[in-house]
Length: 346
Image (cartoon, rainbow, N blue to C red; front, side, top):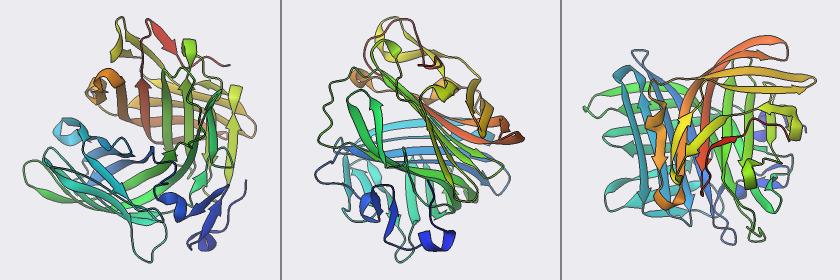
């Protein structure tokens, strides 16, 4: 699926698949449930590495997030209930509650696909500017993604953001930070029947040193089945390739608690991602960037549990050696004993 040149996509309105920007960056009153998702790989002035994730969840009025300050050995995560408000015709979303400073993600005025971002967690504060280096991509070519037999969502990604700004640590010190980021938006149509048994998902966002970005995604249905995986490659030339189904050989292997709901017991590391689909042959190893992966496991109580974490990447892509950064999300919902293997092909 071809996209416009760099110069053309930096103007509104912009079309990708069935999605129109900036309108589809906002909340959809008829389809209010969804989220705006950000992950960041940052470096401070001293070369220290910081990995950040947050998600603004509309209708549910929640914000999830984590910060890994690797040079300081800090691993923080957060699940907050409050109020999420958003514009309907452009990206301007805010989370607030009585206990916290409002967090926001909003479009820079008269700068399409550039954003200002503020996020605070347990004494850390990030005041950042995101500048898109690639256009938004409607996944599955149209932007309407099938996850399970009767479950669909609208979904686009902005895979490569140049990030700059300031970070305040919990000891009050401030530092300039720069890095690379990922932003995506997902929401569910009212026509979604929602009758599938949904056990969770495995999701990976990857930045490669050859300039390619990859989104790989599996939802887990009844019995751990995963009939509709996605593998999307967004190339350095703004080109886009969509692959699906059995070309994905491996994503993740994780094991649930014997009592089922509420806690992930063990992750198998490192993760691997293997895809054989000429000309996009991919064989990557993802090694977690933190020493304590379970620090990223958010216990959502009756809703289940969620793992979020930053990874280092090495391997090959299109016959060339590559390295890079990745972010991995694994969710688990409902009762399920023993291992759920999302690595099996369908």
